[in-house]
Length: 151
Ligand code: SME
Image 1 (tube, rainbow, N blue to C red):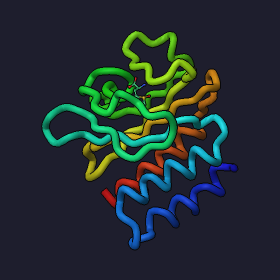
Image 2: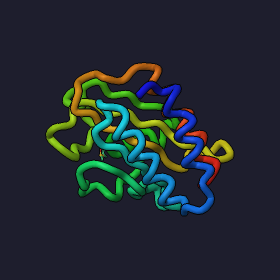
Image 3: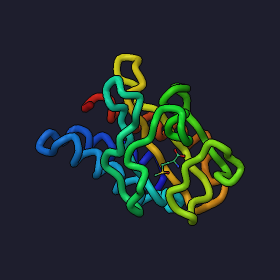
Image 4: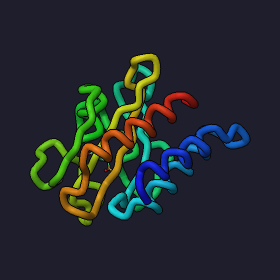
């Protein structure tokens, strides 16, 4: 499904105040994983206070052992300190990468900002090599802006 059609669905999920934040974030993961065929694992990580660690939040896809990631480690940990999107067309070419599944070929991580502070991120793994474009970045920035409003 095109990103422009998914955007209003993201807004509908986010604005459903009958659901908890966790439920709404899980629904976002399900929406993205179901409708974008090269999104094979979709999840959120959040910074844990001042501990310089990311903790796994709602996700869909294979369970991962990496429920806690120190800042600086892996793609996710690097985004926690860089405050910038990280698009990885080929995970095998990355030195500082934490493998969750041997099927994963590519990854994109986009930070979530609340009042200018990087408080977490959306993380997407793909089993397709080099699938992400700037359109994915713009769409995921939109998702993160919406998510920021309910964190
Ligand atoms: N590959 C990530 C770890 C998280 S899993 O993709 C779910 C990384 O290198 O930070």
